[in-house]
Length: 602
Image (cartoon, rainbow, N blue to C red):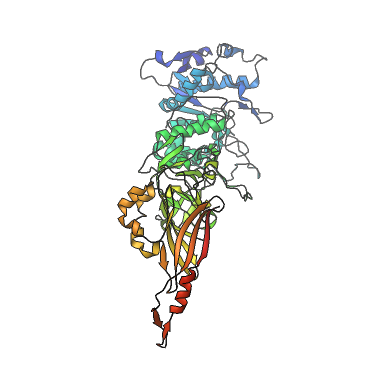
């Protein structure tokens, strides 16, 4: 850590550096928080930050007595004066050393730059005092609020707090820069100074106005609540409106705020840098609010194609939901794999409205557990999901939704993940929407919005089971279909519903089962029938056929019965009715009529 000797600066008007390793243990230093550049008093515009004094021989060895040289730009002169005034204030407060980011880091050395950025939050937190310089503050002058000024406020402020704003009444530029966020939160001794280096006051006396500008909880500003106690979503929202001249810095400036470290790759782009930041955060905490990014759709989506989105946000600006999401630490862990985010949690299956067939991952429970805020997921493979909406959704009657996938599942990270693999699944089964699907084994193989039961599951001999209601006029028949790797079988569930219910247990829903395990659990399976008598004249027989032309089909057949010649019954008047002649006729022809043909795989 390279420090400036304040005494040499004030007395000799020269920048002299000291390394922290050469100083006595326990030394104290002040640190400057500022925005690079300055305001041109004539045009009232911000001067480009390249005029800052940087660490090099020409700048740092210049004699401050030569600042009247016409070759030195106005911005450079003001940068030299900023260093001088910082050292003057620090020395007056009793500190012999000061750290300023513009000239204390050799940015031509990439390793030193990376080390400094990864250590910056710690350096600010370990400083004895943090001096905040607001170059565009209105100072002691009064200001008027323009009607169309962005961020402007009207009202009476104290003479101190109003100097946190510009002459137009807008918050000073310092409050909108990305690096100043961690500088504001790292230290608990923060003092603000206006453009004339007159004291505005300590953070404690300005907390309400600063909280109103930054939307940061006053407890975080005053360190009465630790930063780790705030959710990831909340801390990201503090950075949502902040800007940086270097795209990657929107991610790198948050390293200290989330207590993570990572290599710096300038040129990778803001999106990749921010994604790497989130991946590092996920490795250090189990807080699920990292997925609570929200982007309000600009308008209605007229595309009929399913939309998929990344699990991770592209920038802090996407954490802009109108409610803060609390810190959520699930009882089970999750970790990132090359397949996606591996998670063991509860998903709720949405069965109403435009989100019918999607799944809901709850990130915050409200209204005593009756309403939840979270993200929508669409299943794209066996226990594989992808984010289906770029906005958070609120689901009412959360308790009444069916919970599924309590075992491990995956959420893919990239929005470009291909789902073509399930379309190539030759063993997949499609169920028409007119037939109600009551239960599925295993639940990971069922894709509700496509009404599709996957065939390529983890175990090649795995058994897939469907329980559906098929309308057979005038009634509805409950049918259980068991699909093996060889020949599918169909059973009529209504004959022994209690026995069939043993199939659909929590254990069987979580993982595939094979035929031997199924027989061991339900020994009576071989006695189940695929035929049921509907009336004295006929019965219905359920079958499944498969061919190249028609695909896989469920056949519901009406079969005439071979009744005994002596069979008779009585009508309402008690008179005997003989069916023997009709029965013999039906038995002789033995016709089979297909009452219903349901295509399950086109």
